[in-house]
Amino acid sequence: MKEIRVRIAPSPTGYFHVGTARTAIFNFLYARAKGGKSILRIEDTNLEKSSQEMVDIILECLKWLKIDWDEGPYYQSKRFDLYPPYVEKLLKEKKAYRCFCTPEELDSKREEAQKNKQNYTYDRACRDLSEDEVRANLKAGKKFTVRIKLPTGGEAKFTDEVYGDLTKQYEELDDFIIVRTDGSPIYNFAVVIDDIDMKISHIIRGNDHIANTFKQIEIYKALDEPLPVFTHLPLILRPDRSKVSKRKGDKSVTEYRDEGYLPEALLNSLALLGWSPKDGREIMTMEEMLEAFDFSGINPNNCIFDPVKLTWMNSQYLMALDNHTLVQLIAPFLIKDDLATKYWIETRWQWLMRVVENLKERCGTLQEFADNGSYFFKGDFEYDPKGVKKRFMADGLADKLEEVRLEFSKDYELKKDTAENIVREKAEKFGLNPADLIHPIRLALTGRTGGPGLFEIVELVGHPEVDKRLTRAIEYIRSLS
RNA sequence: GUCCCCAUCGUCUAGUGGUUAGGACUCGGGAUUUUCGAUCCCGCAACAGGGGUUCGAGUCCCCUUGGGGACACCA
Image (spheres, rainbow, N blue to C red):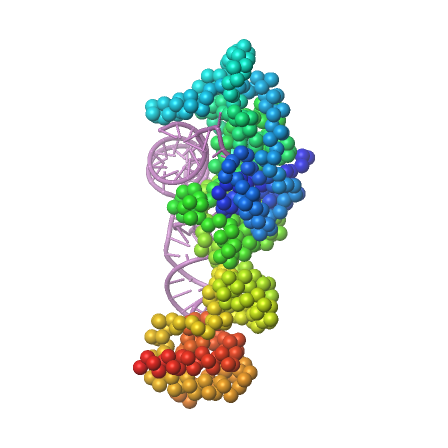
């Protein structure tokens, strides 16, 4: 049996969006699941926009998602010498021809067609030039492109793994250009030659390439090359059902990363767009996905990526992480938000692991550890106004808190059990429910109305700081009346 | 405009002629908890419309509608 070879072929224009990532994931999964090879090829054919910087982003994102490849990265732009022999062959066999039409001529014809609401196709003006005419034009130094010669009737067809039999009338296709005036290959041509050269057996890409596929199979045919297996994936659309784009503010993979999503969660979410395992599992490791992966399970309709579900999935992954890893992962966020320094984090690792333990089931992203737990690092927060109304207004609260503070200050260790005993005893003494004391203390210690258990917070924030924060709150409450 | 494709809860989906149309996220309710969250339980919510075919259509065919994509010497 023929070796299975797929390619991951991003183009370094724009940015690395979730659609590109999803296509990469499916290629990767297919190659791995079937014991094939994956090839990374950067499609940077003659585009001023493509830069090393954009290429680096692609590489970075793939690595972050842990999608690796067996060969490459190859750069299309560095393979220009690969194409001429194929062009020669097509020309010699009269399966392609030189076109001397100028861009201006073509543009005006296209405009004309559009004005008349006609569908524009190239009029094949140069298709049947005699050899003498061609020679004369060449001698006169006329610039030319190379166009492929397509049948003028009948239908082009191929079988897609997801969409089934696809057909298109040849009248709808024109003798499209394969080589530019400057000798460089057009995308559709370069892709086919590269795929042939790299012995790609399966082409897996977005369904926005279906129209290209009709053109590309003509090149394979003209070259007498066997067709690869085509698999077109449904597209990922924006919530308004239009195409994902940078301009409209759609997030790139790097943005998801920077907001604190885990690569495993993003990958898992993306793999579940258009595909689902037979048993309906959702949270799956790469190994589980590989085991269950099967193209017959691909749903042909386009879909919308739901960031809310991604956050849910991310939180599931977050909760499953061990505390050590979690501290490692949140460290950059703490530093970025100026909550801690690298050195400080290193010295307080054990303590951070306990903090993280208390925060992990309350966070959807890594960023939220910094957001929701900022009071573990800084005491100069504002009190939540709603909380103040609800929790700081009880009669005589300041005096009661002062008593708690004094009792707390007697024990320098201030473990959570001690703190809990003190609060409960005081509540009983005051004739209050423990909650009536717990909530104001939480607000005093964190500025917030929710969060981890109060006594865990007391222990983690620690004695002198707890005292300081209670003092500040007591003063604040007194200033209210 | 032309061509191609698609159509099950708001979203992601299961379903391949006979199902109370299932699951997940979101949302609502309950249990639990010092709060929030997590967890568990319950609930709201869909076969776009119309014709066929068939004893029987979410499932097959046609039309309509809706949506998407492609129409470059871009990739």
